[in-house]
Length: 149
Image (tube, rainbow, N blue to C red; front, side):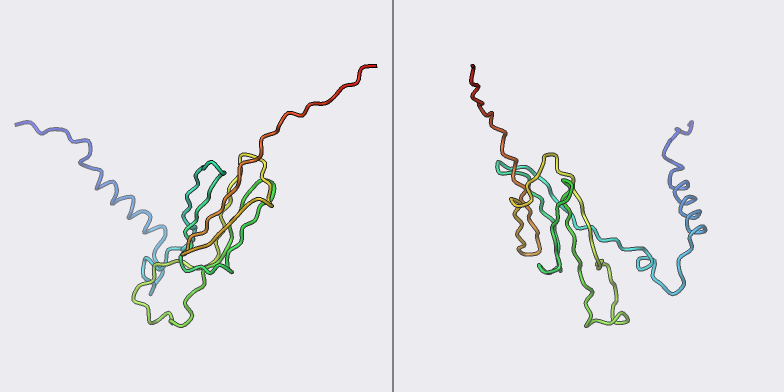
């Protein structure tokens, strides 16, 4: 019986070769768990959607205090900044596993319309920051009276 050709047969071998090449090029640091050796850059996840009132940005910020968050707008770019602090009462050697990231975060979003900074509203509840960027008021046509002489 002839052997059928399987195009995916060698993919696991190829993946192993690629993994080995990366391990040789970037060996893990001695005495450090592989997961701990990876860099931890924290970017809070966000949802952005439109309502009748405007654009809503919701960011999950578990473990971040209200006083550690700021919302800024400049040149029509809305920026969320903040910091999640490390649990100081737990020393590093007492951890069995440490997967949560700490430190500062920075997320920026370009607004598609001109935004009036004084009308932006933000609230922080249960670890979720919600920012409402109201829709700009529509330009109403103005009638100009022309005096004919």
